[in-house]
Image (cartoon, rainbow, N blue to C red):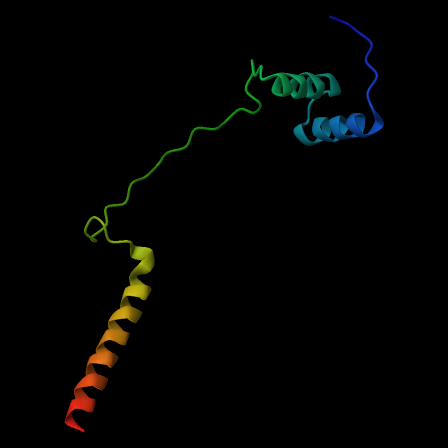
Length: 92
């Protein structure tokens, strides 16, 4: 359907930018924006590429967060220091 539409300057500029960014005609950028605003996404906004997820078999047991191993090492070091300090304090 053809119709005449008067847009505010700021909206027209943003639509031009969106069209240029997505490398599509102004008309398509306007229609996509209206669909999104009305909650009518008939077409996907962008095509997605398939990707493979490769699993990694870890030697760590389930429930161990490998990103927190340094934190665990620090905690063990502090506990060891405290145990030695208390032990030395008893002998003094």
